[in-house]
Image (cartoon, rainbow, N blue to C red; front, top):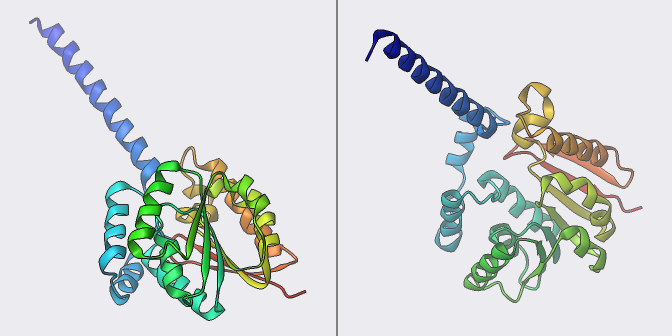
Length: 248
């Protein structure tokens, strides 16, 4: 091979390597997650909290292995406390996934409590149904398949707690329907509302995330100024909003 040809090949290889490196950098930018609290604080809290055993541990491992989003451990413990404190007997969940959070709430409720949970993904409905059966909660948790934006119109109201954990870009669209189904004195829990911290600064917003971040900001603005709600935003997990529906 001529020297000039060698140089040409080397240049092409270098250019190809640069393109791969740029692509890896771009992908890393898309998938990297910024903790909303300092990592050492999060790790400390995680070490303090009790570990689940049995089915809950199995579901946590399944979720991690298959990339299924479930509530983080510190949020799990918060929800247990909130459900118990509210004395909730009737809960609505928007976003079932594998049934993990529904069973967490069912276990925290009194034995006569009921949960209705909405899920549009058919595969998740099947998986959650099996998990709920295995957990012995099939008489207390009802899964309603379909799009929550449609299903919410047909549900009876009077819920003590509503847990909002569905599609983040649709929180705002579902909010007024959720408020109408929540009884006065009830609690609306919204998960993942700080979205990797991106809602706080444009500098943190990843590419292709701008629309969902904009919608989450609108949602936060709405619930913090809604005349029927008193809202607190807690920076744990990926951000949790607690909204109390005023009595009058």
